[in-house]
Image 1 (cartoon, chains in turn green, cyan):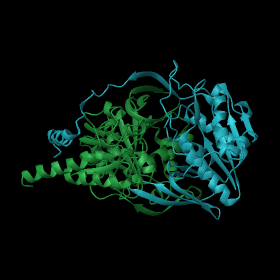
Image 2 (tube, one colour):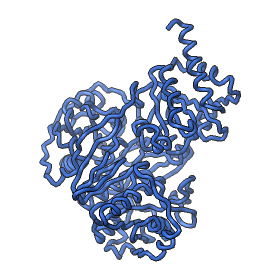
Image 3 (cartoon, chains in turn brown, yellow):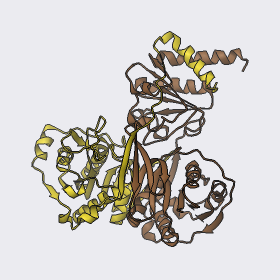
Length: 324
Length: 255
């Protein structure tokens, strides 16, 4: 059976990225050997959760070079490990850093790469969705190993298997010529409140809100509901109303909350990809023909600028009534 | 300074493309144009060339109609174009595309190579990185701001939480996000001039590549309809809306 690897990404604080656990959970059903590669400060510490989610061995390096220089050092290290251990399949997250490494690695291995993967059927067969998730495409991957799959975040539910991993320290000399792209200052613009990926409820706004000042009613609604994050469509981010860190969609964040409330969002393909797996979807839009209504469990045709403030009041009075 | 910008011709950029019986997107005999996602990179390229006194070459791979996307970039101000067209490239994947573009670009030479972050139709999002690896240059990806000074490029790189400042000596590849620049519109003069600007059309053999180099490693085996989410309840009475949503949120146990 196949040897499956997960390229496990670290968050800037050195903790393991949620996508690594999702991918390991899937990897367990694809091969009898499941291993992870994790590079950068925090890597050795990440072996714990990676092992709990099915990694039998974790190839780890805590070297700062992997965090301070884009893509090339990580690609070099991963390629060296690939040549040494010859995995059949490597799973990557569709994230900024992992996408960089997967793309560069493909040019070295000259093996098949499939992106935007939504399900993996076997070591050489995977699926993606196109046209806003209305069609499922199955692809077979040919040519040399390792096959490279870049998987959408939240495609799989992480489940611990209760194992523990053997840590294999990675020793790679990174030449200076691979350290040219240097990361300097890091800036955070995360809004207050829960993160988009983790919130139980996501309230998101689009062009239908008409102007940036009207985003305030979304924040009020989020606060009224509680454990709720505010997101936005690409159009609104491109227009400069809110920062990119709030963008939900193909580029941007993928969310899978209990409830998604789409406000003034028509439902462009690029947006739907990032939210259509929400458990329940509510949409408020003036245009009765907006594509978002085809997905909505509850669709309200009307003026969001009127309805949302009423909803905030309604929720507040319900809470007041229960003495909270 | 020599700036190269990648461009892709995509069918029906604002609507849903059509698939042929061979599961490939129909690219011939359909309306199409420059991928809107590429316009931000073209704009960044033009601004940098204007600032540094250089010129921009637009490079593309695609069928004959892809010339329209190249001409569009020329009409915006790019100085010349390179289009790789070959029947053998039909259905090619990212690795083939990167291999072909690398060959075409090696012949041009460049200080800065710009691209969009992903195509609007394929969205694979790994082509620029594979190309950078083949060309042996760093890849500075997801730039929401690009600036060139004193032989190096500095970007603001999008992250999940905000952005990182990344600096790199040239030559380098940079991918530019939508919204990073405000793309200009072509002028009538620009459109007229574009017709006179040189476009090098090349085949696989012109680049020293064979049909074997163009063999894709990925094959679509089937396409099926995704299970639809059942159409839900629609409320058209505005005055009932707030009550109904609040009730829905309670049923979902999030209130």
